[in-house]
Amino acid sequence: MGKSSGSHDACYRKVKAQYSTFPSARASQAIAKCRKSHGSARKGKAGSNLKRWGREKWVNTRTGRSCGNARDKGEYCRPSKRVSSKTPKMRPKNSAANKNRKKSGLRAKRAT
Image (cartoon, rainbow, N blue to C red; front, side):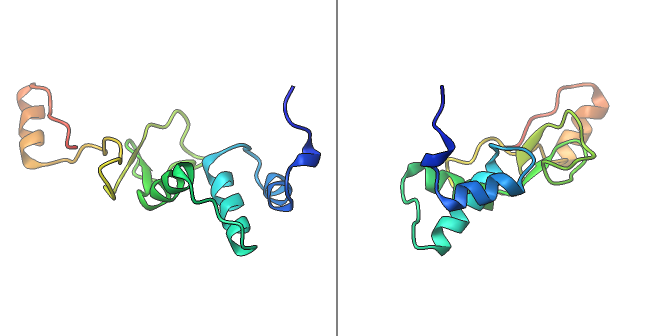
């Protein structure tokens, strides 16, 4: 059994009521933002990872739209900006070399 709802703070309950998909990364960000505005900030490793994730601007590699878009089903999301060495592999760029490889039938190299 999990925690009872009585052990969560007001920010948790407020955000849970607002988001249809819970728990999610966006909901976690909203909880952190609410807690920060009330003077209770999370300063651990998980908090810094969440901030990094927000700055990376994740996008769907197939459509180019932001991740979590309701129109994109079966999406494959990658970050569009590298903000630190801990950023995961980015979406492949369509460079001239990759386009030429694609035309010739060779496998294109992925940009990191």
